[in-house]
Length: 298
Image (cartoon, rainbow, N blue to C red; front, side, top):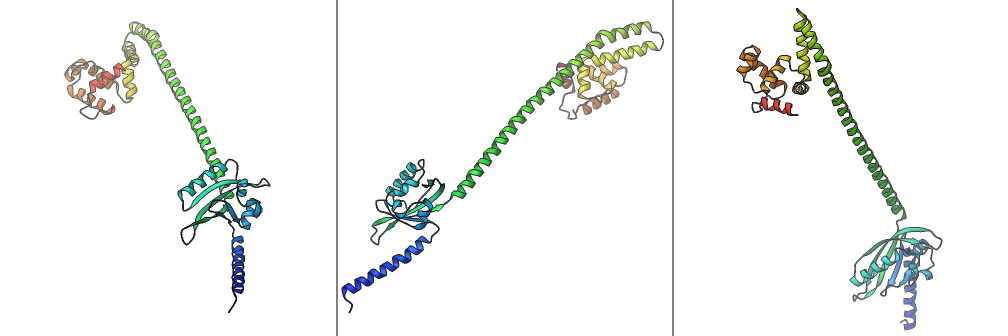
């Protein structure tokens, strides 16, 4: 039967063999692995952790690992770690920047879990560090591209807004110029052409007199604001329909219009129907005289 000393030596030899095999497995991991005791002090790091942070195992133990955490990220990391410990969080996760002694910088993702013994006693915390610098760089690049696109959209929107304003001003100016030209033409017709036609009509004999009178009458119709607006609203109205529309606006009935123009009432009704159709007033509810009065008030 083996002596107690022999059994102890055998157990120590087996334990050393297990530790060696575990070390090989842990050091071969692509993740940085660390173990903290119950007081949240680092007591173990693997080779990947040391290579990632450019620290020796001795430099990383205790609170030594914290020297590689970016100064702007360390306070928040320690605060969140302490909160997770006090609340007994099953999985603590954080992303933060690191700065190696050589000046190399990057990002890591830390995941830490509490470890309990068979009796439920807290033994410590096991954690991993994963290099995520490439992902963070891609996210930053996408964010910059997104901001650039948004800026371009804002610029184009501002340009379009400015162009719309300029176009509105141009169209308004064009309309004002058109109205001014129209007023100038109408005023010239009233001041110069109509008086000249009246004199011509008085001086002419035979067929020229009625012709001059017809021209003068036509120009008077064109220079009348109501006739002008009605012609603008519908350019297809005939001279007869324009005369009927003028009399309707004055409030004359069909019979009165027929007597005034020397035509039958059926002819006036035909003109009424044509005026309503051309002005888009096909429905019986639309009052023709009210519409014509609105043109005269415009």
